[in-house]
Length: 506
Image (cartoon, rainbow, N blue to C red; front, side):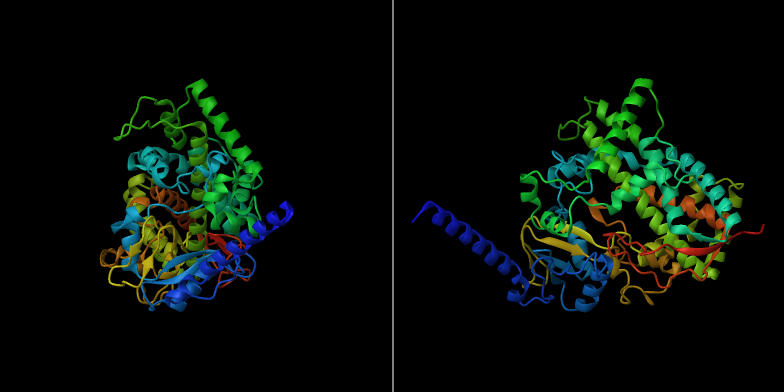
């Protein structure tokens, strides 16, 4: 037999082996008798995503189809069998009680070749624990108080821009305006840069912020490959961040760090804290590990703080205004409550004043329930896990785990009239009696959202200032109900949110 024939035989045998292995993977749940939908060979149960279906719609459809059938349903995350969680008790095991078995998210990341992928959200194992430990002091209440006046200052500019816009037209597209406000907030607090996107919608930071969420380095096949084989993708040095986005954020961070160090500039913001970690070579963790950061690690954390921070808060604010415009009684109650609290603080919006606006907090919590920005929480199982009380339900080592929190938030079993906007769902007594696994906009347990306090703070400031000064109502251009954007992994409206805006008559 010739060498060529041998090589061809070997290649065909390898292809056949891979085909049979993939086919066996795609029959995993069927063979165990655990409910699931038949998968697409390439996309698993995500067939049509970003083209015909939005991610949030997939999670809600799957949850409603299989809830009540068991603690989880079978799912295929591209070509990997995954567990699609259906019960809050199992959510608590994964996020809290048995967290050490579900520490990782299992997403692709490759900090050596793709520095911006070395962000806290994507890191796994020891690297995640180490980075979380280093950043744990950056979002304390004391640090939030330092940043508060900066956000209020941008908030005043926000109100001015709103006023200028309604002087030209009472119909405003609020989604983009919210994003410009939070871009300026995050740009200032994370990079110490006056982004000016409120004044100029095409400012460089706003353009790059949009691109960071919409642009991809790879097409559908590449994304499926990275998610199906993240470890192998790392070994062959694949990257996921588009080149222009990487160059922009690496340049901005290097320039910012160099300027502050050379000129001894302090702003009491997120970047200051990252620079302190970079320069404190002597500080050690409890395990004796150095707490210092490299310039690439600083860039990665600043990048995720920017990309995640501006989008999540702006989306929440936009959807809150959308619901308040349809529920004028709730909007009036919110305005009255905000004004009443402000009066107690002599009209000054302070850190303590915002915390006392209880109904505002209820409105934001209810918005996050109905429009959960990250509608699914991803984890990866680190060792075989038998679901307590269900010996036939086993989550295998290496298996992706999907917690469809956005769908859980719309389950009538947990929230009466689940599709109605009702801030009273978050009255103190109801929150006290609610299982923590039934409200998860920021996750839960040791790997919850580290920037939760900051995100809530900027949303509260922005909404309080808008509601105090403006009245919002629906108009002919308001699309009801909202349609989800098909290309976004996060929840986002397919088109703009157009509302009628008027100044409040004092």
